[in-house]
Image 1 (cartoon, helix red, strand yellow):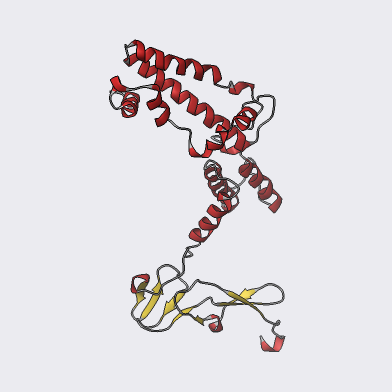
Image 2 (cartoon, one colour; image 1 turned 180 degrees about the horizontal axis):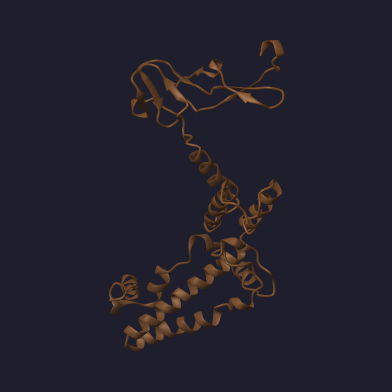
Length: 267
């Protein structure tokens, strides 16, 4: 049995007992497109006379995919049901679905999200990297940081662009990713024994936040970057005074302390 047949069997359960309600109940539209069930919004989305944003294009494709799924399943079930009852139930569904399917060739839309080089994130990154002084990837250049850092950034943005984030979920995802990419904790440190490693005898380092230490197993914990000192010209440095004792639960933070420029005789 093919994968498609397995899929249909999973939908039907027992082939002879399948009816139209079973099919429609199983194949409901994806959650992100529930709003398109509103008739006015659906009509606007399916109006080919109006250019569509990338998000609207995504919704149109989801509507189309949903309808195509129903038609494919109904046709397959129609082959398996020899009864007049099956014909009466499934043929109207097939006809209705085929009549309502939009012709995507009629739309003036942005390119599909599957091609990440056309997404807004990708194009914005190309412009901004060029404005910052990077040599465009299409320009002959030596292999090195100038090229691979751009490739890495564009790869990350290409993945992000295909995830279908909304205006509210995108900042949340970016915030979590930024913290995790920096090996920062998402929740306060607890100070429990399971959080500590002993890289050297008598030195304990927090597994969830590498800048948090303690000198003995039951000793006072401290953040070695609790304070960063900043000179008037913007230069920053750490010193032994950067160490700040902490108590748990603790959310790691760094205080920037502005200091006067050192006089020549003090340097």
